[in-house]
Length: 178
Image: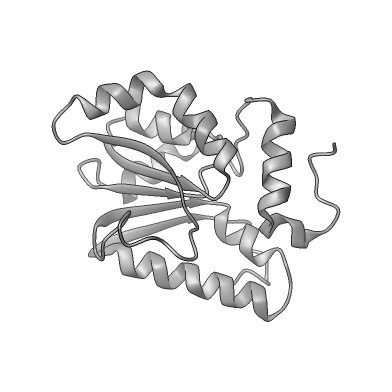
């Protein structure tokens, strides 16, 4: 299988991502940069004491790297059940350590960033949302459906962010995304 989709529309498809992660065989894929590359920007914009939501986490090491850098209250989500299972297995020790430490959270949950479950994330419950390519994946398709999905995601980000919360979006900033 080629890791590249046959069309841009596939970036919004659960089936494409399931195939993508299966083909990667557990090897992390870092869209738009590693923690080492994004660390300085993140540290300037995101308080370590805050609760972090990573949307479209995939199998990136970003969640674990951020946790190791002191972001000890975080939830990472993706709509791919297989990648969430992979991440839970890969980071089982770190997850267990967070569960055993008061005030720490390090979880991976299957969730749709365009329709976040309220039992998973209450209103104004997150200080920082980190999006490394999620918005771009939604906007890769053309037309009203892509714009509506992006609008739903923006609405969910606004809903879960605290009043002084931050949305850190790493994007290619292509015209159709803006």
